[in-house]
Structures are given as structure tokens and as C-alpha cells.
Image (cartoon, rainbow, N blue to C red; front, side, top):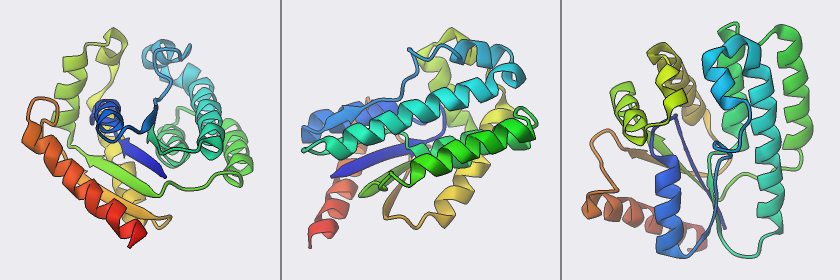
Length: 205
């Protein structure tokens, strides 16, 4: 199977991916954040580095997709290639951070890649409001993320809501994490596992 965890910056995707991989003995595929050479520069000057950042993420995610297709076991992926295009790149373009020319170039790349992409068997969406996102971002303490603006997070949440509402590529599990702490509270994590178990059972029933 291919399981994907989606959600805004600070929603807990990476942590949940790690915990689910350990629980189910799945192979995790993490988002390339620490290795991304553009991320710090992007938060300091979004307009200059937005296109470079998005192309890097798109290429990285496409390489993950190829690895997932070649894998024999179950893979759990931290964020999808769809989010790169439909949420992050679209938001940067609409916000004037990516030019029309660069955005069309980006979309052409994405359209070429998407023909080779199969959607996940189950998409897990972590729904979180901006206060929750900010608290999580501050807790993990990445210096460059201190530059993230509240308006940017809110815009991304709007794009996520629109994308999730129209998602029709497969099974989707929405988990509202606003009042959850699946790291410290074992019951919260168990609740998520129970929901996933029901979805997995539905795939094979």
C-alpha cells in the first residue's frame, strides 16, 4: 500500500509519519527539508527564491514517487506531490511571489510528471488551525521558520480546505488535530490508529 500524510506546515505530518511507520512496520518517506538548499533563503526573501524552492520540492517528491512504485512493502509518505502544485505553488503564484512565466513553466513540469504518478491508497489529512500550527512550529524550534508569517499559514490553510473538499483520487481520512497531542497522549494516537485500521479494512473488504 501507499499511505500519505498531508497537512500544513506544523500540523504534525512528519511526527505522525514516523510514529505510524514504527507502529505498522511501514517504510517512511520523509519530506526533504533539512537537505533543501533553498528553504532558509526562501523564508528570508520569498519572491526571489519561491520558484527555485518549488522546483526542488517537485523534483524531490517525484523521485519519491518512483521509489514508492518500485517498493514491495507498504510506504508511508510525508506530504504528496499534489500539495506541492495545488497548494504551495498555487498560493505563491496567487500571492505574486512567482511570476506568470515561472508558474506556467512549473505547471508544465508538474503535468509531465503527474502522468507517472499513482495516488495514494489512503490520504490522511491533518486539519489544524493557525494557532495550533504556530504552537507546533515554535515547539520544534527551527530558526528559519520564525520568519513564517501568519497570513502565509492562513492562505495555505484555505488552499488545503479547497483541495481536500474536492479530492476524489481515493480514500481520504481527515483527522482534526486541533485538540490532539498524539505524541504525549497515547489515547490520541490510538484514536488515529483505529481510524486508519478501519480505512485499511475497507480497502480489502
